[in-house]
Length: 275
Ligand code: NAD
Picture (cartoon, rainbow, N blue to C red):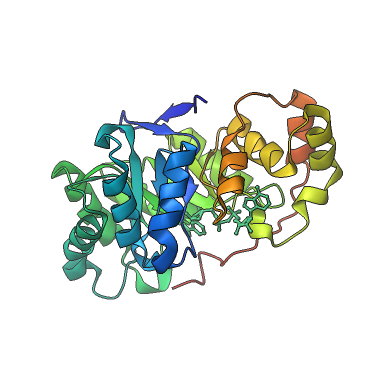
């Protein structure tokens, strides 16, 4: 299976489909990421706060897959002491991952009450210059956060990783990012199973028409909408299912019907109040 890539504004290519490890038990991470790599995934999305970077690192080391075939993202949790702790934070992540650089390093949440994200971004710009990460980006940034960041900095984020699934697509943030050349990474691509997405007629009908599962239809919808996605599953058969989405194409009408499921149905935290 050939997974499409997207060229980021940093000039680097990112596989459009990867594997996320939010809420993957650190004790099980090595096994689960090993399964994902065996299923064919080459793009892994983790974060310092997930507490499982070491397991990701062990799975990478054990796999023997050449480093340049992998795309590894991790994220910094910005705290009151961002300025002092920023470099130790990326160094700690790199050590746990067993890597000398990541492919993408993100500010995990803007945490606006702490008012540190601009300062944190300047540190990330330096990490990219120093070769600790190939690209830098943000996560959970709304338009006012992005406007402030762009006004104050030289590097435009390569990505904004935000909650996106059919019931919650953040069209305003997406339009702003498209205009600025910031790629959209969609977290909770399957809505984290928190609403009956797979029973929606638009999804179920397309699944029936293509002989695919509802999860495959939703992942395919993301790919055709241009989102970068990394659905998570602890189960090898679902990892394989979620990866097997390159042999069919949704029609324009099917994509539109799924896009019409938007209903401001956020399942995660609000970036303005999560600090
Ligand atoms: P998701 O939408 O990928 O949902 C995962 C859940 O969907 C699984 O636990 C499983 O129950 C179910 N599932 C997976 N495959 C399935 C299948 N084929 N059939 C039926 N059910 C299936 O949600 P997520 O894990 O929260 O998001 C994906 C990734 O996004 C995370 O692992 C993480 O890397 C990233 N993320 C980032 C942030 C952020 O703040 N930046 C927040 C949440 C998640």
